[in-house]
Figure 1 (cartoon, rainbow, N blue to C red):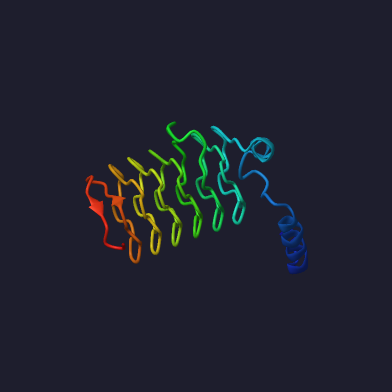
Figure 2 (cartoon, rainbow, N blue to C red):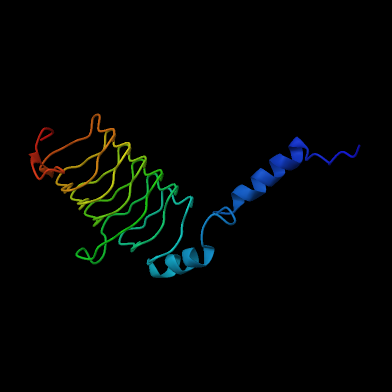
Length: 177
């Protein structure tokens, strides 16, 4: 019987430490698009699946039709979207967006299925026709947000702040003013 060599715990620890020195795990997203994004602030149609972008200042970033599913964007600043009238169909499915700042962003038709938006700032955001199914919006700020036509099935909205918020049915929720 032949035994395959096992990696030692020290070897695994060194690999983990060296691997964490790089900002992106290999193969999880399109690194070329990421490099372009860093210089242009534009990432149209790019794949940033599972990318760890937490805490980054990405104000004015253009993620039109980008795939950010599973991306970690906690505490990222994604406010000040460019070209507000253009449709942004970004996929944030399963993304960690805890405390992310989307102030004033145009996220019409965006997919936030099962996204973690706890304590996110969604003030003045256009989320019309967005999919927020099973999204965790506990403590999120939705002041002045437009949720008309949004899908909120099984979304967690405990402690979310509503003030001048247009709800999916077109009514205005001022319960947190």
